[in-house]
Length: 457
Image (cartoon, rainbow, N blue to C red; front, side, top):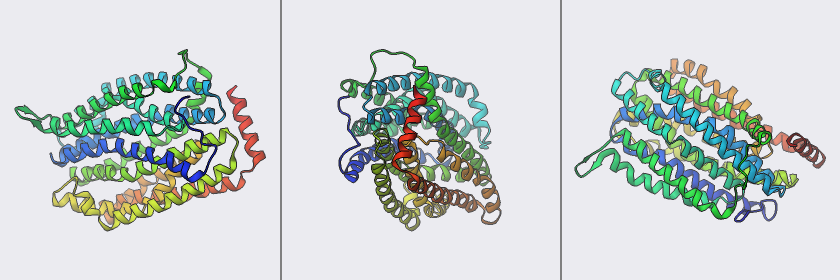
């Protein structure tokens, strides 16, 4: 395919960085959509922030569901590109987009029918806040298909080694969202602002434009197969590979919802602080997620090309880069938490709660980054089932830990439960992959690849 890159040759560190930096920039830009929304909505008060944060749980579940398509498609496209099977890669891309449409429609219908029940579960204590949450959720669901398409475009292009295009397209979307947010939230001239609804409409508009730009920018790549048909065997292969991570992410979101229900007892300010804190933390989450995507693509292509030597070296270099970044973020969160949080909420009570959140979570940032990068390594070799096993077990510990620690440390005990689980996950997952690297040798690698190819026939 035109505009794609071979990741199985050349120096490893420059190759990783060339692929990583655009993905990091893309993730940062896409994450900034939520940050910009939260900054402007924060000026309306903690109630609207709580509304947006509550609705976002179900937006996140949609994103988690979509990984059953996006992860498997990305990994199999990388394997096909590494093995020189471009036509199979095109078929996989076609199937990915067809499945995206079907999933988006089904999820949108479910949320629109159950929206009142879902928002009502949180017992926010204010009909006004609940109504704002429902409005934000409805508009977000209308844009589900565009969000899915944009995510799949980005992952597929990364798997092909063409990570620069998603960054350029998402930058345009970010600028549009940044301009529309204050205009639609607060109004301009004689036009009244729409509040929380305006934030949702700004993001929807930006996502639609990003989808259009992706289609325009990929016309010359010839990344789609000319025959648009359902390949059932390939779909099963993709869905089976993506299923473990989907279960993990849905479980993670459900656990987050339960933890949020625990936090509600401290009032809307506590919920607002948690949602703002998650948005701030997403900067490091999405940044290292760029390296995760690069590692998955790099290892995926080298797995397809039977290059275990490059897999080992690539992972160790990525581990060093991740450690440096994680330490820097941890120091930043611990030393200047209140200054960071003041960009979003300004009242004294929220600032104090936010500073406590940032400082406690700061101790876990290094380990969270190590976990995320290693997930990319496991995805690259097709072992997508291993990270979810550990993630589900240790993330579920947050619930009993939150209940236990909050009895002594109150709200800070909930933040401690989140930090402790992240530390454990990071240590366990890195140790497991390092063990796998020691076990890896050429004969085992080739036998594993033959088994994978045999199942796909």
